[in-house]
Each structure stands twice: as structure tokens, then as C-alpha cells.
Amino acid sequence: SNSPPLYHSEPSFPTYPRIHRDRRITVRVMILGALVMFSWVMATVVRHSKSNLTAMITRTYTSPGRTLQHRTINVVEPVSEPPSWPSRTSVRSSFPLPTTGNGVGFKGAITRRRRRRCRRVFSAPSETSTSGSIDSLVSGSNPVGRRLGKKKKQTVWQEMGSLAASLPDVVNLGQGYPDWQPPEFVTKAAEQAIRLGYNQYTRTQGHPELVEILADRYSTHFQREVDAMSEIAITVGCSQALYLSLTALIEPGDEVLLLEPFFELYLGQVKMSEGVPVAVPLSLNRNSGQWELDLNKLEAAITPKTRVLILNTPHNPTGKVFNREEMEGIADIVRRHPHLSVISDEVYKYIINTPEGDRGEKKTVEEASSPSSSSSSSSSSSSSTTPPEHVHFAALDGMWDRTVTCSSAGKTFSITGWQVGWLVGPRDFVARVHSLLPLVQFCAPSPMQHALSQVLQEADDPYKGHDSYYSWLREMYASKRTMLLSGMEEAGLKPTEGTGGFFVMADARRLLPLVPQSYLDAAEADERPVDFALCRWLGEKHNIITIPGSPFFGQPDDGELEPPCLIRLAFCKSDEVLERANEQFRQLGHELRDYENKLIVMEKGEERGEGKHLHEDHPHAEPALASSK
Image (tube, rainbow, N blue to C red; front, side, top):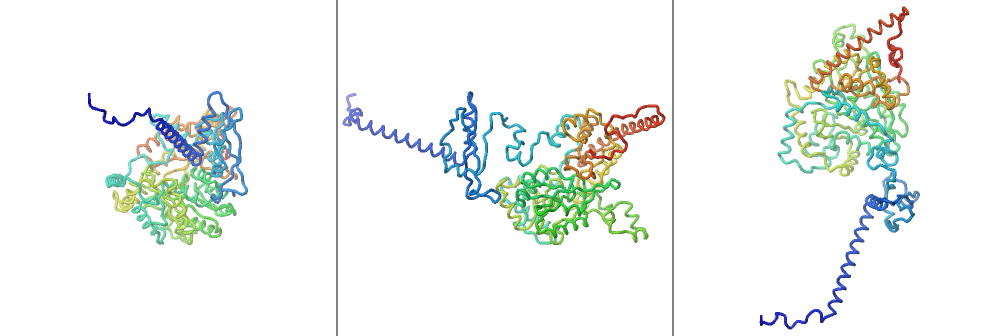
């Protein structure tokens, strides 16, 4: 083209060397800015994520051909810390830094100013540790292991759960959860809550509709006004309510009283809260099968360090319902010890296993109609003639300010997976829990909370020919307990007395001679009591899963209790499952009677000098099996 260039008068770049100099300056400024930004990001990471820094350094210095060592430097604790932490002016801690084999460390990774921000002492994993292994999680080298203690064996729930999963068509009377669907009005409430849009966060301290319903109900239970917003907290199940209550009540080293046998969860939660569990054993009357509380023993266990008593009624695992006289006795002890508080676990309060129309024993009705017996009745027999009832400990005189009541809806409505629990207590205490809730979760499931607010109201309406759902629930569980007890007695199991919850504890000493020696040897090799051998044998040979009694006990010190001889069975199962269990129990009963008949024959022959005892070498074959292993 003959047309001149558009910018024909503008000189070309090569004729202007200054432009090249400006470009170089710009590039250098950009590089410097990028370096400054990178340094700031790294400083932020170092300052706010110690664990990430340690992991990064560990990966760097554990590359192939290098050996991880530790070099210790001093770290000064911060000025502001929780009351349980030591003072920064008196304590200096060790902070291990990884180094390479030649001793050259990552100098400058943590400056003195940043080290002052490090609040906790932590260690990089050694070259011999196994990341993610069970032993590393429960060993004493980390906070969890230090609090819970070293554990190499599976828990009883893991062991019996694995056994149940390995057996075909097993009858599972072990873990306590109902094996049927919730009532229709419960599932409809859940569906409606989701459709109405209750699918996002709700109030952290509790869904407003739910806490209002609970406040109204507990105001009736406690005969005092309960404030919905300041005296109730909604938690993820009752387990979290218990744990947060312990966290808010005790300092490291404080003692917590547990009525033995106790739910194993209590022991772990007390240890995780850095408390000291102290067992107070219930006495088992072998003649009546009653679990009895010795109030003198309870008070004798209280020391200046005792801060909390965990009270569970109806009681897991025994099914004991503490009567009013026992509860008043406990309240008197609490009044005499101003530093003692009570956590009342009441998840089974609606499951009292005596129908409303037959609340007392048959003999009680007959004795009540007899003039002579009525005149000779005493206060000692009042607990046996009085129909079982749930007593709210916080409702007793002066106990509101000393008690936090924990409960949930899971057991009552067969919705253990909903995980909605709550605690009710004095305003000052609940305020502590309210401050903890945002640190563990933003809220319990919103649709489940809203659904439960509707369920609690509908449960008071007539249900299946009964005055309310709760009335039907009591009769239903009473029927299931009676069904299971009939089969247990045929199998030689002696149930202990219990009128609440959905568990039965049974004395299984009579079955121990039937357990093959191989099972006893395996339990001994695994450092397990003989009740584990018994329960494994029941599962593998008779297809019935039960729970050994020993995990519910500490170390018996007076020989009164015999945890190796006790097993726990759950009757919150369908009638079909319970009937299958009874069929297995009947077969077990035939086996037991055959053994005992042979034993009688052999003993008669032994008296005439005709032979050897049937099980002379069996460690549990003696008729008088009263000694505790």
C-alpha cells in the first residue's frame, strides 16, 4: 500500500534505551512485591497453624536418605490462658523441632515472637511411629491417650459387634437400640419439618419451638418455672449433654462419683474431662435379686475433691428405678456437702416396665387386702409395695440449684439416630454450656429439633387404645420384658430385679461349667474375664449375642459383687426376635439339664467309688460357684 503508516511520526522502540530501563525496574518491583506477599503468607501460616508447619517440616526432613531427630528449644507460655493452665512466669515448656541427621535445623522457621504465641507443647512423629494406628491414638504420648490410658484391646461394643456381624441370622440382644420403625406420627413430623424448610441452621442453644415445649414440660415436672432461653440447652444426643456438663463442672483432678455398675461412657467422659472417677458399688441381694444403694458407703466416698455425682435412673445396665426414699437420702447427702453437684441422667424415664393397671406385685395386692398384713407393714417394705415411678431429682427440696438434668428423645420414641438431647438446670450453669455449644457444633439437627417439638405434643394424645403414647410404651416394654424373662429362666439364667429401661442383667454362674475350656483359655490369653468367654460361646454356639457384665464394673474390692458372672441382655427387640431368642434359650436349657443330670449320676457313682467327677478339671464346675474371679 502507498498509504503512510498510521503512526509514521512515532520513533521505534530501539531508539529509546530508557524504555528498556523502565521495563527492568517494573519487573524487579513486581518480583519484589511477589516476594513480600509470599513472605507475608508464610508468616501467617507459621503464626496461625503450628501443626501444619510441623507436618511440613517433618515431610521435608523425612525424605529418603534422611533421619528425623529432635532439637529442643524453650517456649514461654502466653500471658493469657485458661485457669487450668500454668502461669507463664513460672513454667517453660519444651518444643521439639525436627532436624536432619547432620544436626542442621530449620533455622528461622519460628522466631522468638512467634514462639511466644505457641500455647501447647507438641511433638513431631518419630521415625518409628505408625501414623494412624490404634496404638498411636491411645498411647500415653498424646492428650487422648494420656487421659484415657493405654488400651490395646477392643471395647466390648466393638468385640460383640464384630461377633454379631460374623454370624448368620444372629439373635442380637446386645446393643440397646429398638429394631423397629418409630411410630407413624413421629416419622410424619420429620417429613413435614423437612418439607417446611427447617433445613438450615437454627439457634445454637436450641430451636425456639423445642425449648419452649421442654420448658413447659419441665416446669410441670419440677413444679417451678423453667425459662426456655436461659435454663435449657439442646445438644447432639444425651451423651454430649453429659460431656458438656462435666466439662462445665469439674477441674483437672476433681473426683466424680459413679454408682457401680455404671454405663461405660461415664468412665471415658470423666477421664477426658481430666476428672478422677470414683466407684460406689450397689449391693446385689442374691436372694431377692434387688440392687440396693448403701447411703453410708456413698457419703463415705465423698472427699474435699469430690465435685459431681452422676445419678442414672432408671439405671443402665441394671434397670433399677431409684425409689423416692433413696432419692431423698441422696438429696440429704448433697445438702450436707455444699461442694457437690449432681448430673441426673434420665434418658429412660418414660420406660417403667410395669403396666399401669398392674403396678405392684401380685402378692402386694393380696397383702394389701389382708388386715393382718396391713397392720404389720413397715417402712422397710414400702419400696416393694409402692408402684415404681420416676422421681426427678431436681424436683426434690433444694436440689434445683445443685442439679443438671440430662435427657433425650431417642429411647422414648425409637429414634436413637436423630441425636437430639438436652440439659435443664440453673441459669448460671446453663450459661456455661451455652458458651461451649458454638465450639463443638453450631446446632443440633434443625429438622429433627422442629419435628420433636411437634412429637412431644402429639405423644400426650390417646394412642392405640391407651391414654397416651407414654402409657402404651410402658405396657409394650413390660410385655417384652416378661417374654424375655420366661426364656432366660428356662436357660438357667437368673435375672436381677429391674423395673425400668430396656435391659436385664442376669446371673450366669449356672452356665459356666458348659463353656468349653478353649473359650476360657482364649479369654485368659486376651486378659479378659470369664464372662467374655461365656458371651462368645453363647454367640458362636447358640447364636445369641449378649454383653458381658464386667465392663460395667471397676475393680471390686470387697467380694460382694461378681461381675464375671453377670451378663446384660436388651429386650428392645421385636416379638419375633425375642421368640427366636427364647427358642435358643430352650435348647440351652435342655443342654444344661442334661449336663446337671449327668453330674448327679456321676456324683452318686463317685459316692459308691465307681468313677471320676464329670468335670473334675473344669475351673467352674463346682456346685458352690460363689467366689468372684
